[in-house]
Amino acid sequence: MRQAIRALGWATTALWVFVLIFMGTIFYSLANLGVGIGQSRAFPSNKGLTISLPLLINNTGYYDISELNLTTCVTDCNGTLVSASTTYVPSISRGSSIEQAHNISISLNDFVTKNLTYLLFNDSVLNVDTFIILKFAQTIYFQTSTNTTMPWGAPLYNFSVKEISCNLTNRTLTVPIGFENHSPFDINGTIRLDVYDDKMSK
Image (cartoon, rainbow, N blue to C red):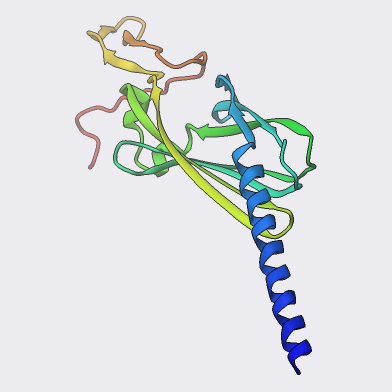
């Protein structure tokens, strides 16, 4: 009976030593995990703007990393969601590193549906919340988050309509407009103007 109790005690001690060593190596691997985000670059897209963030992860720890999930949520100063983007990396082996671009897409078409049209005409600051979730050794999940701000340049800043002139002979209206493009992408497109007389029914 005493031998069985003694053996159980040794087994319990060995188990605790194993758990402590395992947790220690996990924290060591976490402390030595290299995560870097490079300089962001903005590119025009068919729908608006894409901001690309170079992501570098160097796994110098003892265990593989799996199920890496990087999510960014961009909101305006009122907390309205402008964009949500996710990058998923299935696995990063120990002793290896990966480089991958995390792309944040901002659609100008959503500005109307989300009541964000003021961002077309006014410079502002956007809030960027970043969430990172990953798993060590197929066992332990780790989660962290950061918050930063990003300047926003309005594509139609200081939009104004100048004095309208009318040519009755040619039946034409001249409507001078002006604005400054503070955004990092070029502006091209068509402006539509509808003109009605004062007899049009409301």
